Image (tube, rainbow, N blue to C red; front, side):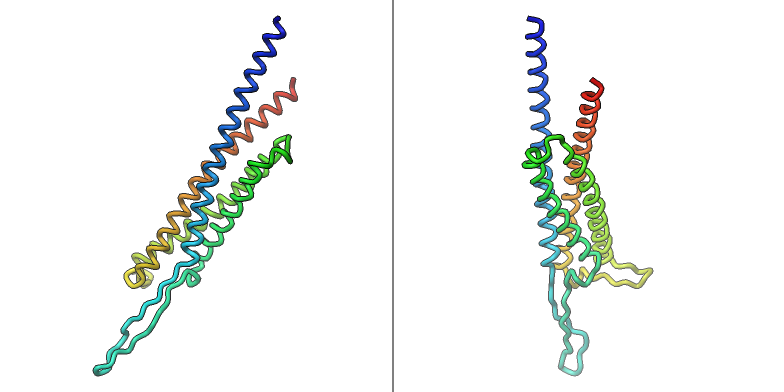
Length: 202
């Protein structure tokens, strides 16, 4: 009877532990999917960001001299970096979602958690650098810099700047979600390590 009670208690504990792990996985999948959508939106919006306008630069008699200028994301290395960083983060999240959902069949020991954690941190670093550089250039485009004699351009290419601001905001949202995923993944990795050490000591 005593052994039966211990077995029942152990079964209940395992069931609770399994339920907690499943909830954590669902939270990670949800947050990672939202991060994927945010970085994908940022990459597409910035990658397609382009505006062409015609300006009058001089008037000779009754004739106006006009020039047509095009603002596009390729003109600024920071914007190119943001597109690349968001594209990498999107691809990374797709791979990690596949590992979360199907990885258990390939990795019963849970070694994939270490790989996921390392890749998350790498992509988190790249994405934060891309978002920060884009935000800096966006502020410069909006307000200029009188000390360096850099003129603002958002008063002339308003649509271009609005799309750039939206892409930068989306990248920061994706960054925040990826940060949350990384924290949860590291906590899960720590718990798995502690469990493994506990089993080894027993």
